[in-house]
Amino acid sequence: MTLWHIAWNYLWNRKFTTAMTIFSVSLGVALITAVLTLREETRKRFEEEGQAIDLVVGKGNTLQMVLSSIYLLDAPTPPVPYSVYEQLKKEEDVTGAFPITLGDMAFRFRIVGCTRDLMTFDWEDPRYHPYQLLEGRYFEKPFEAVIGSEVARVTGMKLGTQFVGAHGVVEHTGTPYTVVGILQTSGTPNDRGVFTDLESTWLSHKHGAEEGDAEGEGEAEGEAEHAHAHDEKIITAVLVKLYSPTQRFEFSRKVLREYNAIPVVPVEEIRKLYDQLLNVAKTILLAIGYLVVVISSISILIGLYLSIIQRKKDLAIMRALGASRGEIFGSVLIEAFWVTLLGIGSGWLLSAVVCAGLNVFLVRQIGFAVPPMAWTPDIVTAYSAVMLMGMIAGILPAWQAYRSDIARDLAEL
Amino acid sequence: MVRMESVRRTLGPGVQFVCGSFHAPAGSQMALWGPSGCGKSTMLNLITGLLRPHGGKVCVDGEEIQGMREAQLDAFRAERFGFVFQTFNLLAPFTALQNVMLGMRFADVVPHGEWRSRSLEMLERVGLKHRTASRPNTMSVGERQRVAIARALVNRPKLIVADEPTGSLDPKTSDAVMDLLLELCREAEVTLLLVTHEKSIAERVPERFDCVGLVQESQS
Image (tube, rainbow over the protein chains, first blue to last red):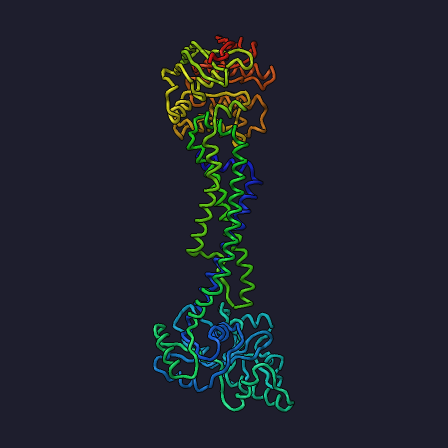
């Protein structure tokens, strides 16, 4: 029978109070864990995704360029001439250049005009297979489409299903697409993409613009760019894969010098986004989490303190049986340790449940899922801090028990 | 076994405990008898070291305890004394067996491997082998006091101090508990100091010490 066993028995003897205290600790821990997990894991996933592409070359806001071209999240940036792509693919540092056009939507999913090369490219990373087919084949001619797994799930489209794209509220009814392939779930933004060849997007825009001209309308969003599409081939951006990521900055400078376009390193943009904007949100949420833990620590303190007052008799008996003051102090501190440890454990599980629930939302919104039970250095640090607070909360009641007067407490029995 | 010489302890303003001389030989069974407030429990606390004297000597098993450091006294108390209280003082979260084992847990005089077997043996000796897994709140007062006696004796101490051990019991149970306590102490050749305010209980103990007059007004 150890002090751990004795402390555990006392906690078990007042199950309800103990459970409530553990629950309050677990709420704070769950909040802290969820914030840290989501922040760290989404950043990691964004960066992993961004790492595959060394540069995005296009025009407009750099963050918007990355979010729209790689993560299919934001509105497309202004177009660049197709000639930019043609020039880029001839560069000796470039191992792959992939033009994309964005602008149209199918249902609520982004239609990505691209080349077949993008889908069949060897990314040299065995973990990265964002364009593997689940069924069907890749597109071979205009108005054939390959859809992501989430698109297939939400829309119910199958091989052979026809659908039309839309630009804003204008539907390109004259140029329907046919589903020829469905991608495997990759846990990437591609799950939410509808992929077709560049020609399809140009043709549907041209057809739409002609229809618009005929009807004397044409003031929808992005119509200025559409006007260009009549005459020259345009694209939204070029995704560039270099021979080595170490060339990213040098090659960026070259693009800035020699091209009428802006190069962006996706990973850098994402880091900036996290450091500048999301850090504030993280700090606020963490502060709330720690506040909950501090309140929980106070409830540990109050719970143990009241229990010590009620247990003065038991402590005096233990002292009479030969327990030293140190053992009494230790047994109370161990109770604080158990409560905090169980609070951390249950908080971790609770955060896993919360993250698993949020994953459903994340997959639908950004195509990423985060591991619900992740360990990061930040989480380890946070748990150590929570444990320290719990132990500090245990010190006052333990001290109260330590300095109890046996003769007086026994006399009061 | 126990000797007190010129022991004095201030209890409050103008009140003090004074014991000129007291001696309980090893193996004796003695009742410290007297009405409430006469100083019986104070005397017991001084003998067990729970209270320190302000003057005089308290000698237990050949060792003067008034000068011992607290840790030394804790170990001495755990090793040499067994306690039986009026209100049993079993620890509620623990079973009867665990309560008896606790006596050994803190005393650290019995090898860990023997705790269980020795506790079972003691519970059997007090007639409670069938209640080893019971918690105190499910036991009768008589059973609780028998567990307390088992806990007091399990370390094979030199001295049992029993403070009003029958104070919470009905007369029939009281008789049974007294019989058991006296018999076990006799068997184990343990010195017994029993505090009681009931004359009938004191008379069952072979020797008696009248505590009247131990608490007096101080001269200063």
